[in-house]
Amino acid sequence: KNQVEQSPQSLIILEGKNCTLQCNYTVSPFSNLRWYKQDTGRGPVSLTIMTFSENTKSNGRYTATLDADTKQSSLHITASQLSDSASYICVVSLNDYKLSFGAGTTVTVRA
Amino acid sequence: GAVVSQHPSRVICKSGTSVKIECRSLDFQATTMFWYRQFPKQSLMLMATSNEGSKATYEQGVEKDKFLINHASLTLSTLTVTSAHPEDSSFYICSAMLDRVSSGTYEQYFGPGTRLTVT
Image 1 (cartoon, helix red, strand yellow):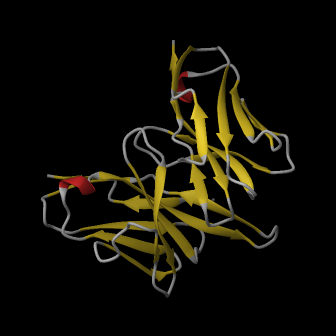
Image 2: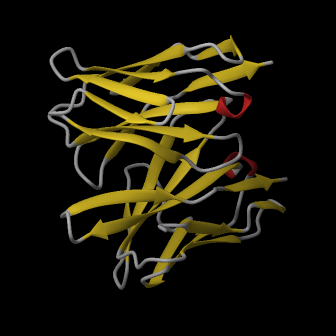
């Protein structure tokens, strides 16, 4: 069973709208939790990194939250743009070398 | 900074042949690099950890004689898929570990991936 579960599997939103992606994990203890953006046919690019003591981290229109008690994280995308269409992957680090990847949420932004 | 490249980006080969994929850290030195495989709509799966100057560490279920890894320099790791079969067709992604000495933290930077198709 995957230690990192993401939902929804995919979603479609209209340009300019907001959306929130969810990540539940069972990896414990963990070093940090990261959100990556992966464009089709490309490698993942880091959006945010949070240690277990951080509750929120922002990167432009992307805001990640972390609740270490409930082992949940979310990624909020504000005022979506067409270029936000991608897969968003939640990754929990056991340590610097071992990463547990979620299957990703595919976001499609339509004009 | 912290750019990782892969070459080739796409490769098509015949069953039974071998294919080499290169992973380079362009603006930093990486003692440790990682090789992942990703099937459609699935998570990245770690195949092996590549350490400069020593043998790679393979994850359970990954055949070391089929997936040869060489990390001969601090900026280059190669993955060779030997005697490729159609089931080896996948998206192969490498990452390089950047050691931020000043903060004592590490970060993996991913390459753009290589799409391998075995016919």
